[in-house]
Image 1 (cartoon, rainbow, N blue to C red):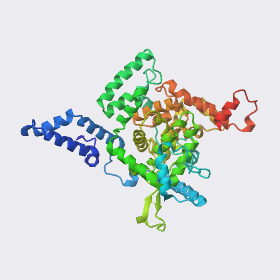
Image 2 (cartoon, helix red, strand yellow; image 1 turned 90 degrees about the vertical axis):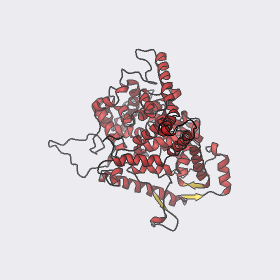
Image 3 (tube, helix red, strand yellow; image 1 turned 135 degrees about the vertical axis):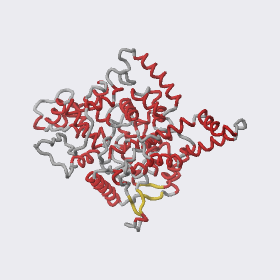
Image 4 (tube, rainbow, N blue to C red; image 1 turned 60 degrees about the horizontal axis):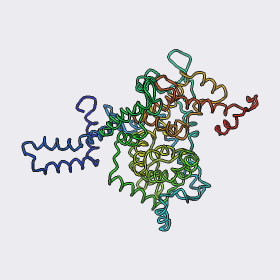
Length: 527
């Protein structure tokens, strides 16, 4: 890292991060153990300690920690821009995000006023004991949700994105200007098909993929056996970059959980277990309005899904502690959003009495629980599931519900989707528009949820394999575009959803033909 690729400030930030992490203390303890060995000569002290750490596998753990930092912390520009530019460089998008946050808070406060309930309160001792006893069965006796409504849904967020306008951009017929044919009118640069083909070359249609084809010129059984054999070697190496490279062709089902943990650098230890127990204690002791929002969301989404309803209790055990986790606040350093603030009663407007609400700074929306649901198939232990979800959220999912110019933000993904669909599926694009149904209005909620709840769970997990493998969410929009690098099997379900959804938007006057036998099923899907 002594090359010019990384600035001194960036390297120093990495060192500071490592010094405050658990691995730094563990390395010191391991080094002291090696120092105490009687066979170690004083003349070979440094070399002996280093060899001891390498032989014990600490060099690989240190590399994984450094790799995680590189993945989650973008390079610092020289000179370093101000903090607000690190969050979002475009002023008009920054203002739009702030306006959207105020709208969310207004909706939350209105609910508090209408229902006469506080944002937070301490649970009575009796309730605390009841919650502790039923922690693994939280779905049986939940709170009264009849008057609770989601703060916002993806369709509300789409209206805001459609209304975004760059005040410095004016389209015209003069040379040098181009028209934005989609409904998102923000002129951001997105990748073209050639760039995507290069980036996703390992997903070329002539390459075998785990879980998608599993058969080209090679019998499926033989291909799967070879992938499992190679996967075992990758797992035994316990190296994040190696696991990430292997996952570019998909993860074998039996190895997916382990590979994801290696890519995300997650190794649950006693401290992690203790931290989760502290979060659980906070849930037992204090009731938040956000708890009811999470309950309502799980009831409206996961419990109504044939694939995920069995995981209802599992979801509560992840989402409720997540709302109390202040570690999540760290992602606001590079997120265009800011954590909402509340004030201690009687101290309104006094900044010294302001607190983040909820403690993790994330107000759940309709569909938020679906970020967790597919992962319930992977992990038997709630704590491991919790830390994997938390890492997935602060790396990727937060970008799907905040306004930013980041290429992997929801605005950029929406533009990429429209661009790919117009270019490579023009007939489908024109057909949808001709029946009064703009494609993005159909697809937006799929993008916001990363397809969770819309594709089958195995398809969602295969898709998320690639998000982790390429450290990019552009594959979400790429599924629509039909670009030749992605195997056709991965595109067909999405195109089918678009084609199936289109008739729902035809106005009554346009429906001149009598519905066929399959119309009732299609109508049910459209609602």
